[in-house]
Image (cartoon, rainbow, N blue to C red):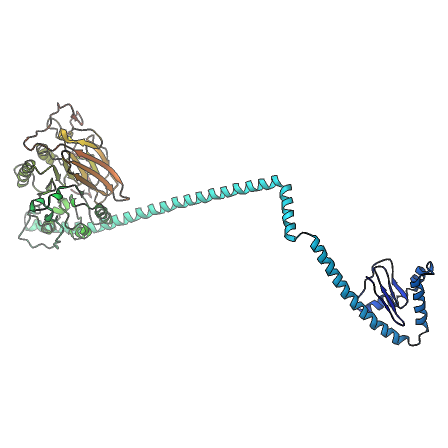
Length: 568
């Protein structure tokens, strides 16, 4: 681009190679940096006296119009008298010219930039192109990088899983420690309370000795009880078929059994577990409260009101007449042993802490009661409860030899199906067994050696010991050969369901652990409806389907390890 402006004293030509100012060449053969500052321009070029360069350029161009024009302007400039005014005018015009030049130059640059931008791809497209070229040139490296990332991610995921697993294990360990501490605290509280109660009981017994003979086993109806009476806990007699209930009540039902409760959190858990199974009947098997009164046990078992047939144990009868009468009055009993019929099942509740020898009132009651039940065509099952155990694996308490020798033959004679016991704080269940009348009675005869399912064609009786209500644990030091299943270290209860099918009624027993409600043992007894006119005698040793638990008699079998802090 070029400009030619003519004045009387100034001619300026702007081009890519030459600027002529006031008859002088200001620059040639190179781009000229033109400043917008007129003074700066003048200082750099106007006073530089470039005449020598101009003359050199024009020497070989005598016919050049521009050189002639430059010389004429130069001559006119020399002849002028008003040099100062002209210079000022020239400077003003030069400033205007420079402003216009810079403005036009800026527009040209902008247009050039716009034109170049239109020709080039968009910046984003360039980046994409670069990325594509980079990926194409670095395929292997990028693939290796992706594989490394995947490995790192898998490694991190694995570490996260391991951390979660480790955290879960830690949580379980913490929970186990908490549970263990809670159990220890409950046990410590119970022991503390029991120690206080036991001391009070010792004091009471000393006072009783001074006053006269101990009458703890007798129910004193004239004595005003010093403990509260809790009404509504006994089994609701309106369920009794003999009192006019509908025949539909003869259908299937379930009942629960457990002994050795105490008043700890463990006992509460047992009661809650029983409630969840919704039994129609509950059989507490003795040693209900270890305190000087039964109030705490009644409070814990309040959800079972109207469902219980209570069996009395050592702490229920030997901790003073007042405490024993509290049970007798609350359950409206005439004596601690009694019986009951419910839905084709005959229940006999014995009192092993009361006199049971031959000729005693209890002995006469038991014999007459079982004989009557065996003749009742509406009775298909007979269940007996007793606090003292007839049989047991080696544990804290020994079996009751006299109790076994007197009553097991009677049970066989009258077809008792199941005997429920407590006293040892664990769970045991025998095979169907028959009384060993020819040898050591502590080694009964196995009439069926199947693990769980039994047909009662051999007339054996199953004995279950359920001392798991909540009062501490008694370990085993072995397992008796006639015991099919034994469990220690678990609180829980035995749930028994009756299915009154015809002609094959069935009884099923399931031991449920309080923790998680797990079924730790299960057995069933199925039989033909019995002939009520038959007088069934004990099975002899020569019967083919009967085998003794052991051929050797052991007179010390009943004398098992004792415990100074346990029930007597």
